[in-house]
Length: 108
Image (cartoon, rainbow, N blue to C red):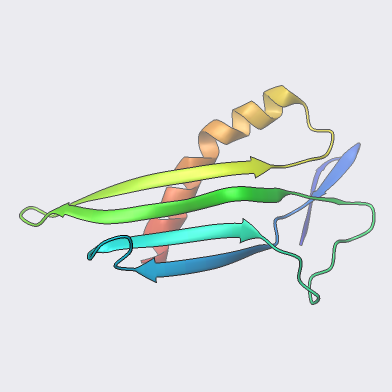
């Protein structure tokens, strides 16, 4: 999938693998890990730059039962590559985790 950001450059969305492990590293903890992959069905598109996930994931743990309280730890290190001005990267990086959490909640 590609996304036109500006007529001067075009970036391809990530191609990632997701792994979900339950009860890791201890019972009641869910661990989600994402990493960039190469996939034969989704080859890189000529003229675009594919972003790379170096490490990304969630650690989800219910830390209290009554009332229920859940701790969520978000880890993310990505290289969006390309010629994107640093101020735009910094602007988006502050908003992205909120969007991820929203997507996670909507997916539950």
